[in-house]
Each structure stands twice: as C-alpha cells, then as structure tokens.
Length: 101
Ligand SMILES: [Zn+2]
Image (cartoon, rainbow, N blue to C red; front, side):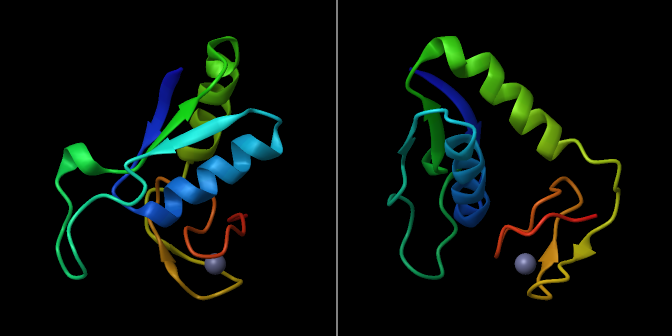
C-alpha cells in the first residue's frame, strides 16, 4: 500500500477518496477516527490518510489528486452549492463535493 493523501480536514479527505474510488482506484483510510475529542485540534500525525491498496495505481492516484489540488485560484472561494468557504488549494468543495468552476 502507498499513502497518497493526508489533510487535517476530514471532509476533504473523504472527498478525495470518493474521487479516487470513482476512478476505480481501491483505497483505504487510516487515522479516520483518531484525533482529539470535539473541539480539540488533532496533532499532525493523526490526520486522516488515504492509502492506495494497489501500488501500481498510486501514480495515477497522485496525478488525479495533483490535478484537483493544484488550482490556479489563489483566494478562498465560496461554493455555489452550499455556500461554504473553501481553501484556494481545492477545486472541489470540502462540504458537498461540488467543483469550483
Ligand atoms: Zn459545497
């Protein structure tokens, strides 16, 4: 297995995983339920992680994630679907998964 993605925001990790699953890449999550209790900031080493089961698919997974996370946008943006604020680094809404166009 190979780790391809980690982020402090669990919703973003979920969305990235859905994206990979949609491309037919089998993944597992680690640290999914770890971290502090409500209101605590989890430590870096307990961020949820996405691992690709088949290492031959890791490169494809990374290129998909790279495509999603390297947006030209440099400012936070508002989702048209749910009005959540999204980090400029992400082209997909962390909350509802809608893409930012
Ligand atoms: Zn949204």
